[in-house]
Length: 144
Image 1 (spheres, rainbow, N blue to C red):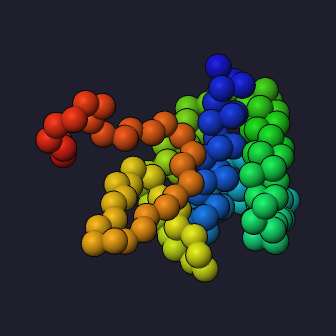
Image 2: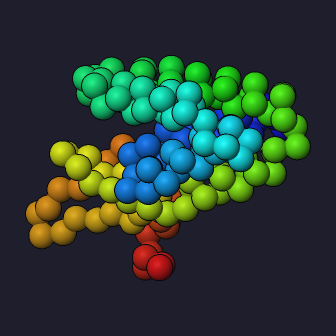
């Protein structure tokens, strides 16, 4: 369970870094890992992670993001090993990080639970991370 929670937390953290709510999440992660105190070292690590993501060339993003996710997974696993009583707090923070939010900048858009469509000759494209629901599997009316 610790490994799964650490992995989920690290993935949620990477996703939260590209949302409008990142600054609030950043402070909450630093406070949680600091056991109620704002942990400046964790804040610096979070800042370095976001800087690394921002500096990555597009072709390297998946590789670097996977590497950074692995680093944070290890940090969360170590934290839970030292503070097993904090698992509930981390789970609550993960749920908060996973709340639907969106941001757009440069040529990117990040969100959860989005329906996308294009019409009148328009084009729609996206990169999907996570489970996918493509709609009806048989010809027929589209359900909402």
